[in-house]
Image (cartoon, rainbow, N blue to C red; front, side, top):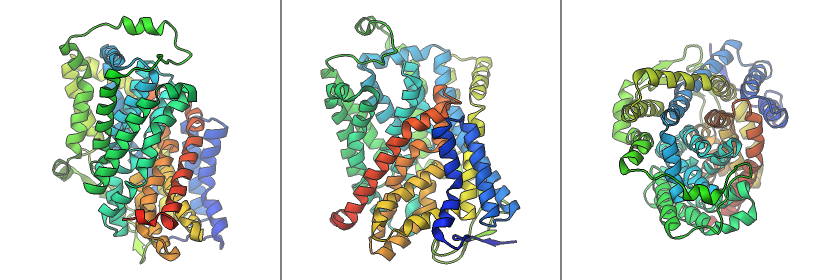
Length: 544
């Protein structure tokens, strides 16, 4: 049995889009207003999506159920697999006492919370996004900030917002590569266009972070450091995306930012050391009495994160990935594979939607992290019994996210296979000459729904290109805007929220974190939308 998507089931695009938005309204309401736990919001939105798909979009019950199950499966693997292995490595350093050494060694660079946030949330987080993506940067960097003594809500929120700058080029450039595949547009041109949008955001994200955590007056004290971090990142992001390609901008930009900021802080210090008001004790005295460590102690303590870095880079290399992918098991999902047909204007010709669940157990980023955890355990002197004990504690810590993440992915898959996401996209695409502004919001919506810039490009990339041609705008611009706008939705994606709360011990407080980030997400999406609109009609010379 086959089923063809209907994008205007209520006979009116606005009404159909309103119906399609019901699951999004449910999850926004539960997280932002009711401050409900993530698993409650996720399950409720999943149920709402199922009912809308079946009752309004007339999707067969069995097809909707199988779509949900496939999404849930992807939520468990590979997404949850990444989360649990990343947090497991962090937990091992805590259990063995090595994180105290890490914490103190960072404090020798700077004991100022503002500057620590720039180093870890912005620069190191961007490096992890470029090397692995898919939740790794937030899980690791947020956990590190909490270990340093950051307020957990701020640690999670800052890492989510900082993750704006690198997302479009995350996972060795896979979002841009996918955008090129689904649209037929040259990947290099999309890379160049995104590289002429995001650097403007990257420059002031460090300033944005510090203002958020400390206020404007305290930000002015560290403005030179903010500019060093942001400008060094933005310059390398522009150069690498425009002259090398989409694979390396995050890696090169983050390394440039880390190096520039570390060197700068060797010769420059803020007028005062800033800590959160809740932190007690004499700041100057604490900084002056930091213990000293031998080179061997420092290398041992940092070894898990050094190994993690090496592994995610190794796993991201194309020859290695191709080799590891030979072990991938692909299962065509019965009852869903080639059952649902997409039609114009979402696709050029009627196309049956594939539904293959890929178990890339060897090439998955989580596997790289798990191997890193084994190597780390050997170096840290963790016994097999202690290894499994810490892993068990980590799993127990993440039982609620194990419900939240799969339910959110189930929601995304129902909305994608039922055509609900496409109804919302078509509604935004109907804005005529204002479409360049809303192109960024289409990306924002895609990432909010799926938690992934890659998935958002796969979902809306072709729609962006088709609509741009209809309104007389270069499709390179709008396809790029899908990625650039998408990064602003990452911080409020329920999937990202679940990862961040799991890493910082805020499970059950997903609503608080959502409320913390949602205003910033909307504000940044507006900025990207305005930038895209100007590039369409005023600054068209910027389009490659």
